Amino acid sequence: MPKKKKNTPIQKDYQILAKKLEPKRNVALNVIRAFFTGGIICTVSQLLQNIFILYFGFDESQAGNPAIAVLIMLSALLTGLGVYDHIAQWAGAGISVPITGFANSIASAAIEHRSEGYVLGVGGNMFKIAGPVIVFGTFSAFVTAIIKILLKAMGG
Image (cartoon, rainbow, N blue to C red; front, side):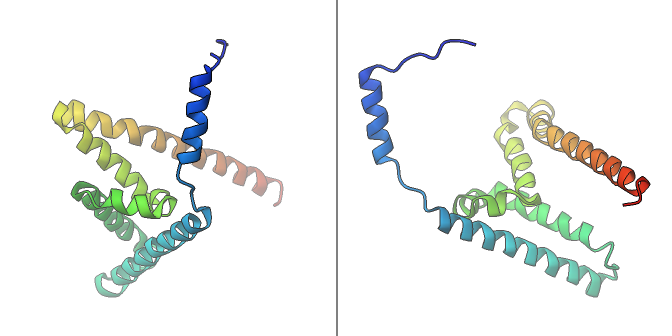
């Protein structure tokens, strides 16, 4: 392990000054914003699901998929228009954690690297973000299934 470099007295003074001038975060307000934003996303998703059930003839088990697809398209559209980042800045994890945050990260990577071309720029960088998430999701589902099978075999 490399040795940690010691700060000079000027660097120490700078760190103290920077700490004093750093704006204080209002954790309670951030938690409330995240909670309500996540709740709004869930409410919109439920409304979309109800619309697909009532007006398009989906049954309850099928209506979630198109509702999620609409949320993904909306967050990608808002990312492209530059609105999503402003909402995320205000809402924090409330908008970043759900599927909308995943769609935003993929769309952002695509937009950021479009100057490199569609295949290597957009496609390549989109899947740098999506790949690990898909692999982790698949692995998590596998582990969960194994645990469920073991619990069922043990009579649980």
